Amino acid sequence: MSEHPKHLPADERRAATVEAVINLAAEQNPSDITTTAIAQRMGLTQGALFRHFPTKDAILEAVMTWVAERLLSRVDRAAQNVTSPLAALEAVFMAHIDFVSEHPGVPRILFGELQRPGETLPKRMVQTLIQRYGERLRHLLERGKAIGELDANLDIEAASVSFIGSIQGLVMQSLIAGDAARIRRDASGVFAIYRRGIGSES
Figure (cartoon, rainbow, N blue to C red):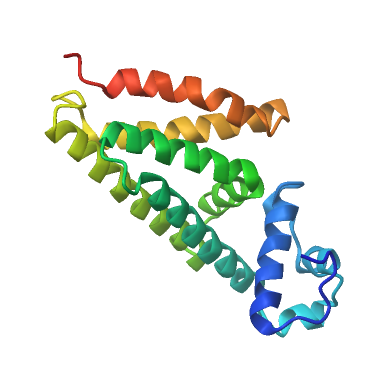
Protein backbone atom coordinates (compact mmCIF):
# COMPACT_ATOMS: atom_id res chain seq x y z
CA MET A 1 0.00 0.00 0.00
CA SER A 2 1.26 3.49 -0.82
CA GLU A 3 2.72 5.40 2.10
CA HIS A 4 0.61 8.46 1.23
CA PRO A 5 -2.65 7.20 -0.34
CA LYS A 6 -4.22 10.54 -1.29
CA HIS A 7 -6.77 9.38 -3.83
CA LEU A 8 -8.56 6.23 -2.70
CA PRO A 9 -12.16 4.97 -2.69
CA ALA A 10 -13.92 5.21 0.68
CA ASP A 11 -13.39 1.54 1.62
CA GLU A 12 -9.71 1.67 0.80
CA ARG A 13 -9.34 4.96 2.67
CA ARG A 14 -10.86 3.35 5.77
CA ALA A 15 -8.53 0.36 5.43
CA ALA A 16 -5.55 2.69 5.03
CA THR A 17 -6.59 4.56 8.18
CA VAL A 18 -6.77 1.33 10.17
CA GLU A 19 -3.32 0.36 8.92
CA ALA A 20 -1.92 3.76 9.89
CA VAL A 21 -3.30 3.49 13.44
CA ILE A 22 -1.95 -0.03 13.94
CA ASN A 23 1.47 1.00 12.63
CA LEU A 24 1.55 4.08 14.87
CA ALA A 25 0.55 1.95 17.87
CA ALA A 26 3.62 -0.22 17.29
CA GLU A 27 5.79 2.88 17.65
CA GLN A 28 4.18 4.79 20.53
CA ASN A 29 1.64 4.68 23.34
CA PRO A 30 -1.72 4.19 21.58
CA SER A 31 -3.39 6.71 23.92
CA ASP A 32 -1.00 9.37 22.59
CA ILE A 33 -2.02 8.84 18.96
CA THR A 34 -3.84 11.92 17.72
CA THR A 35 -5.94 12.44 14.62
CA THR A 36 -3.24 14.87 13.51
CA ALA A 37 -0.63 12.09 13.70
CA ILE A 38 -2.92 9.69 11.81
CA ALA A 39 -3.55 12.23 9.07
CA GLN A 40 0.17 13.04 8.81
CA ARG A 41 1.05 9.34 8.55
CA MET A 42 -1.41 9.07 5.65
CA GLY A 43 -0.32 12.29 3.97
CA LEU A 44 -3.75 13.86 4.51
CA THR A 45 -5.27 16.86 6.23
CA GLN A 46 -7.40 16.30 9.32
CA GLY A 47 -10.36 17.56 7.32
CA ALA A 48 -9.89 14.80 4.76
CA LEU A 49 -9.63 12.22 7.55
CA PHE A 50 -12.80 13.46 9.25
CA ARG A 51 -14.77 13.06 6.03
CA HIS A 52 -14.52 9.31 6.64
CA PHE A 53 -14.42 9.24 10.45
CA PRO A 54 -16.30 11.91 12.43
CA THR A 55 -14.41 11.18 15.68
CA LYS A 56 -11.32 9.43 16.98
CA ASP A 57 -13.55 6.80 18.59
CA ALA A 58 -15.03 6.09 15.16
CA ILE A 59 -11.51 5.37 13.94
CA LEU A 60 -10.91 3.06 16.92
CA GLU A 61 -14.18 1.25 16.20
CA ALA A 62 -12.97 0.56 12.65
CA VAL A 63 -9.66 -0.70 14.06
CA MET A 64 -11.44 -3.03 16.50
CA THR A 65 -13.67 -4.39 13.74
CA TRP A 66 -10.61 -5.09 11.60
CA VAL A 67 -8.75 -6.80 14.46
CA ALA A 68 -11.72 -8.98 15.45
CA GLU A 69 -12.42 -10.10 11.91
CA ARG A 70 -8.79 -10.85 11.07
CA LEU A 71 -7.80 -12.51 14.33
CA LEU A 72 -10.87 -14.75 14.64
CA SER A 73 -10.63 -15.70 10.98
CA ARG A 74 -6.94 -16.54 11.44
CA VAL A 75 -7.50 -18.81 14.44
CA ASP A 76 -10.56 -20.43 12.86
CA ARG A 77 -8.54 -21.35 9.79
CA ALA A 78 -5.74 -22.70 11.97
CA ALA A 79 -8.07 -25.05 13.85
CA GLN A 80 -10.05 -26.11 10.77
CA ASN A 81 -9.75 -29.79 9.86
CA VAL A 82 -7.43 -30.52 12.79
CA THR A 83 -8.96 -33.60 14.38
CA SER A 84 -6.99 -33.52 17.64
CA PRO A 85 -8.28 -30.80 20.01
CA LEU A 86 -4.83 -30.48 21.57
CA ALA A 87 -3.22 -30.05 18.16
CA ALA A 88 -5.93 -27.54 17.27
CA LEU A 89 -5.15 -25.56 20.44
CA GLU A 90 -1.49 -25.45 19.46
CA ALA A 91 -2.41 -24.33 15.94
CA VAL A 92 -4.60 -21.56 17.37
CA PHE A 93 -1.83 -20.49 19.76
CA MET A 94 0.75 -20.25 16.98
CA ALA A 95 -1.69 -18.50 14.63
CA HIS A 96 -2.35 -15.90 17.31
CA ILE A 97 1.39 -15.47 17.88
CA ASP A 98 1.93 -14.98 14.14
CA PHE A 99 -0.86 -12.38 14.04
CA VAL A 100 0.55 -10.23 16.84
CA SER A 101 4.07 -10.64 15.46
CA GLU A 102 2.88 -9.29 12.12
CA HIS A 103 0.87 -6.51 13.80
CA PRO A 104 2.69 -5.57 17.03
CA GLY A 105 0.53 -2.49 17.45
CA VAL A 106 -2.61 -4.60 17.92
CA PRO A 107 -2.03 -5.89 21.49
CA ARG A 108 -0.94 -2.41 22.56
CA ILE A 109 -4.24 -1.01 21.26
CA LEU A 110 -6.28 -3.75 22.94
CA PHE A 111 -4.53 -3.30 26.29
CA GLY A 112 -4.96 0.46 25.98
CA GLU A 113 -8.69 0.23 25.33
CA LEU A 114 -9.27 -2.12 28.26
CA GLN A 115 -7.55 0.39 30.55
CA ARG A 116 -9.70 3.33 29.45
CA PRO A 117 -12.01 4.60 32.21
CA GLY A 118 -15.74 4.28 31.71
CA GLU A 119 -17.64 2.46 29.00
CA THR A 120 -16.88 3.16 25.35
CA LEU A 121 -17.89 1.29 22.23
CA PRO A 122 -14.27 0.42 21.30
CA LYS A 123 -13.76 -0.96 24.82
CA ARG A 124 -16.93 -3.07 24.57
CA MET A 125 -15.75 -4.33 21.19
CA VAL A 126 -12.49 -5.54 22.76
CA GLN A 127 -14.44 -7.28 25.52
CA THR A 128 -16.67 -8.95 22.92
CA LEU A 129 -13.63 -10.11 20.96
CA ILE A 130 -12.16 -11.69 24.10
CA GLN A 131 -15.48 -13.38 24.84
CA ARG A 132 -15.78 -14.80 21.31
CA TYR A 133 -12.17 -15.97 21.40
CA GLY A 134 -12.75 -17.62 24.77
CA GLU A 135 -15.77 -19.49 23.42
CA ARG A 136 -13.58 -21.05 20.74
CA LEU A 137 -11.00 -22.10 23.33
CA ARG A 138 -13.58 -23.59 25.66
CA HIS A 139 -15.08 -25.60 22.81
CA LEU A 140 -11.69 -27.14 21.98
CA LEU A 141 -10.91 -27.75 25.63
CA GLU A 142 -14.27 -29.46 26.21
CA ARG A 143 -13.71 -31.68 23.17
CA GLY A 144 -10.24 -32.62 24.36
CA LYS A 145 -11.55 -33.47 27.80
CA ALA A 146 -14.43 -35.53 26.36
CA ILE A 147 -12.15 -37.78 24.29
CA GLY A 148 -9.55 -38.20 27.04
CA GLU A 149 -6.86 -36.13 25.36
CA LEU A 150 -6.89 -33.64 28.22
CA ASP A 151 -6.95 -34.11 31.99
CA ALA A 152 -10.37 -35.42 33.08
CA ASN A 153 -10.36 -32.97 36.00
CA LEU A 154 -9.30 -30.00 33.90
CA ASP A 155 -10.87 -26.68 34.90
CA ILE A 156 -12.01 -25.44 31.49
CA GLU A 157 -12.36 -21.80 32.50
CA ALA A 158 -8.95 -21.71 34.16
CA ALA A 159 -7.36 -23.43 31.15
CA SER A 160 -8.92 -20.84 28.82
CA VAL A 161 -7.68 -17.96 30.96
CA SER A 162 -4.21 -19.52 31.12
CA PHE A 163 -4.10 -19.91 27.33
CA ILE A 164 -4.84 -16.23 26.77
CA GLY A 165 -2.57 -15.25 29.65
CA SER A 166 0.33 -17.17 28.09
CA ILE A 167 0.01 -15.13 24.90
CA GLN A 168 -0.33 -11.89 26.85
CA GLY A 169 2.78 -12.81 28.83
CA LEU A 170 4.75 -13.36 25.64
CA VAL A 171 3.57 -10.00 24.34
CA MET A 172 4.58 -8.23 27.57
CA GLN A 173 8.01 -9.88 27.59
CA SER A 174 8.64 -8.79 24.02
CA LEU A 175 7.62 -5.21 24.92
CA ILE A 176 9.87 -5.18 27.99
CA ALA A 177 12.80 -6.54 25.97
CA GLY A 178 12.10 -4.19 23.06
CA ASP A 179 12.40 -7.23 20.82
CA ALA A 180 9.30 -7.95 18.70
CA ALA A 181 10.87 -11.14 17.30
CA ARG A 182 11.17 -12.64 20.78
CA ILE A 183 7.49 -13.58 20.90
CA ARG A 184 7.94 -16.07 18.04
CA ARG A 185 11.17 -17.47 19.47
CA ASP A 186 9.62 -18.21 22.85
CA ALA A 187 6.16 -19.34 21.72
CA SER A 188 6.85 -23.05 21.23
CA GLY A 189 8.46 -23.46 24.65
CA VAL A 190 5.63 -21.62 26.39
CA PHE A 191 2.99 -23.72 24.67
CA ALA A 192 4.87 -26.91 25.59
CA ILE A 193 4.56 -25.95 29.27
CA TYR A 194 0.87 -25.16 28.81
CA ARG A 195 0.30 -28.49 27.03
CA ARG A 196 1.89 -30.43 29.89
CA GLY A 197 -0.35 -28.63 32.33
CA ILE A 198 -3.62 -29.55 30.61
CA GLY A 199 -2.74 -32.92 29.07
CA SER A 200 -3.99 -36.31 30.19
CA GLU A 201 -1.56 -38.24 32.38
CA SER A 202 -2.55 -41.53 30.78
